[in-house]
Amino acid sequence: MAECIRNRYDFVVLFDVENGNPNGDPDAGNMPRIDPETGCGLVTDVCLKRKIRNYVESVKENDPAYGIYISETEPLNRSDRKALAESGHPNIKDSDLKTLKKADKDIDQKLLDYMCRHYFDIRAFGAVMTTFVKASLNCGQVRGPVQLGFARSVDPILPQEVTITRVAITTEEDAAKKSTEMGRKYIVPYGLYRVEGFVSANLAQKTTGFSEEDLNLLWQAILNMFELDRSAARGKMATRSLIVFKHESEFGNAPAWKLFERVRVARREGVSVPRSYSDYEIAIDTENLPEGVECTVMG
Image (cartoon, rainbow, N blue to C red; front, side, top):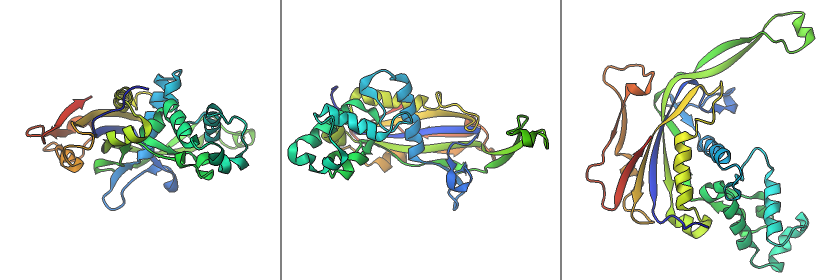
């Protein structure tokens, strides 16, 4: 496996949506998520991680070291069973898993090594592997070195409900009564979102083995995650900027919040209702950075 990362990273991502729904809330009829107190739009960390996973799955489709554990195409139990088979226990029954540790004292490390070696998202984000958790194995819960917060829109958003029609009728019985079907969808006319993230070199070295190659792929995935995720529901979405703060130390040379405060986003003077990225002014203060910290802007 490639060498683990040796530096801590903190980063800010700016992305926008135009006439789309960046993250629907199933508890609100798939309406775009909103902070009810401020009116600002929200996008969950789970949503963003899904897009990163999908990008990696697409560009590394046939690479056995870059599998995706949380995938639409394979049940988690099947992936867990592959790990058990590679660890020397191909035919073990679920009822015998709880006693497996007595028969093989190194099973935790064997399973963890296999999962981290074969699945990018476990190396990055960690995972809860239910099969192993139920068996009371320590490797069942893995905390990953890469963590994201919720994305929040810079300004309040005003979702709009759009009525749509379809000429194709679902059933013959309905076709005798009407010529169109009615539906609806929610859109955000425009929203610029900001999300902050963290990469822990210490956790990478101790647990998952997240490497420099993995890190470069993560940056690539963040910059391009919306390019392979087009749909009518999401409208036009794009990553506009990725600002990365690199620390010399694996434990960091400055608090993350102090670095995040150096990235300021505000509406340009005279703009009352922003409708494009150019309606905002992005200011990144790179003067007198804390010793041992460097800033790189991508995108």
